[in-house]
Length: 167
Image (cartoon, rainbow, N blue to C red; front, side, top):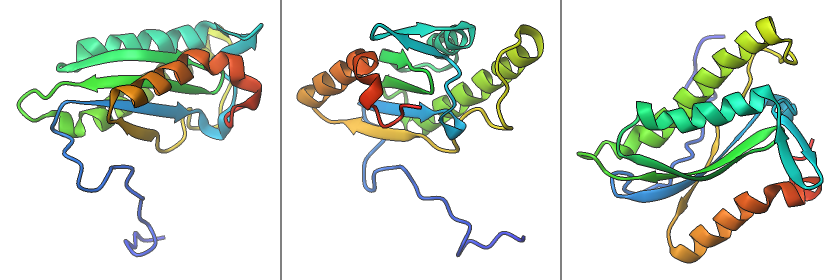
């Protein structure tokens, strides 16, 4: 089917009118495609990462080498999704697309590493795409919101069975 912008359009996850070039905190959630539990298990209210989960964790931490002008705050790898807070510090107004670029790089790198793990380490297979097409982004606008989101991330394993991403 030929591309038709009237029917083939993506909804923007960007907040209309928000100046993404200013310093900011961004809460992101990325889910595996079909919510497959590929990164470990919750045992006794604690996330126990498998090798794939540790790879996701390492890839997240390594984003600091790839992207300047950012900090990575609280994050958690769950069996089928990831939550993290990115602190964007404007560097000559380049933060505007950096969050999307970071998520894209993160998804690409982890997908390639996961494919290697399937081939060489017998990791569970997945159907063509490791991650869902988009991601959830929320701009953290004040300290109270930051504290609530940080607490949510830290307590995510405790509420796994009630989580909307529970598989």
